Image 1 (cartoon, chains in turn cyan, purple):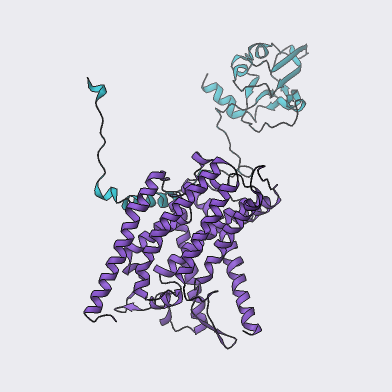
Image 2 (cartoon, each protein chain N blue to C red; image 1 turned 90 degrees about the vertical axis):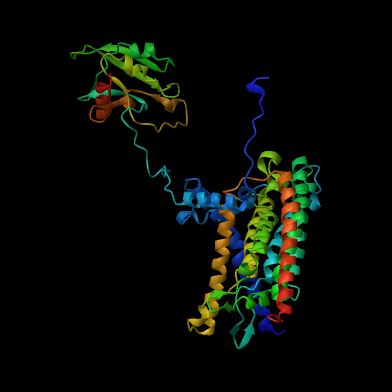
Length: 166
Length: 354
């Protein structure tokens, strides 16, 4: 009736195309040219991919002069959608008065959303660029403070990125 | 037949069977994987040995150690027999290929071919048609619908393409006037006007194209790999095969690729003839070595061509395959040999050719 019912007829093949062999030669030229193009594969265990500073790897605690910035306010544990963070606060003689006596992230639960980093008022928990997270047991995946603490020098890129983009 | 000639014969057989076909098939498997990777901008296997060259041997070791599973309802005897047929046919077709000129060693003339038979090309055609049994028996004895379909497709395909393959060779046979492959090669060593080598490809371009397409179909390689079309038939005729029995089919496929490349080289590309090598003034033995090297270089180039074609062209549908086989290839082959016959008759009429 209207244009929808019209039969769309494709163009017939030309004689040269019907002969097939010239078309095959064209295809061969294409594949042979493709053979000499560079590959983008990195040889993984030897070559490691170094992520940009915007990469969200495993969350870590920022340690300034060997002491964590964290004041154990518990906002990260509160915001964590996967309930991966557990914080227990305690008091300290330092200026910040509170510190986490226990800070544990269950890396099996963590979904790398970065909410903890976003919510943190002290910039004490940030996403690092580490991505090699393979575990052989559930116990191994519980990262305590000793595994989470990283110095500001190590996290310079990420902290700079956060300052520029927040 | 004294001891020495028997020893020479055995040496030739061992070198060709293990050196060229088994080792060559392994290297062809490796080349296939690497070349396909390069075409797809990947790297391919490069872990085992330098640049991954030992990968196929690692695969063979893996296949050897795997469990050999036979389906419960399968015909066990034929199930075991089928890969043996496939591999033995694949290994024995190379016997008639001359891979070098006659050389003189230990004071005797040695022909560089295993079986110096009079029927030459016919032996080849006969053996390749027996090769169908390997595939179709494998499909039938597995008691699996997909395998059976693969086997049936394969036998239909091989029978239809065998015809045009045989007919496309008639042109070459008429030109050379002999079925012996060493004679065919010797005739190609001459030159026209001292420049162009008298290779059959220049005389029989149509025959060459027909033969090439048919040999793709004969070796079950892509455009024509319907017997093992993965998306439709799971694995085709070797769905129910495991371990080294599957490995034998795999090896046979690549041995067939090498053999059909060698046949193409012998019939159309002048065999072991390297143009103008005989004018370099080498000693006869050195010249023969150069020619053997030239032969294998040509074969390797053709095997690479087989591989690149596989990663270029999509698979034909079954009806397209049959249509091309019967409506295009067969008339083309017949036209080719009629044309060749007419030209030869004409040349004889005018007394140019005897």
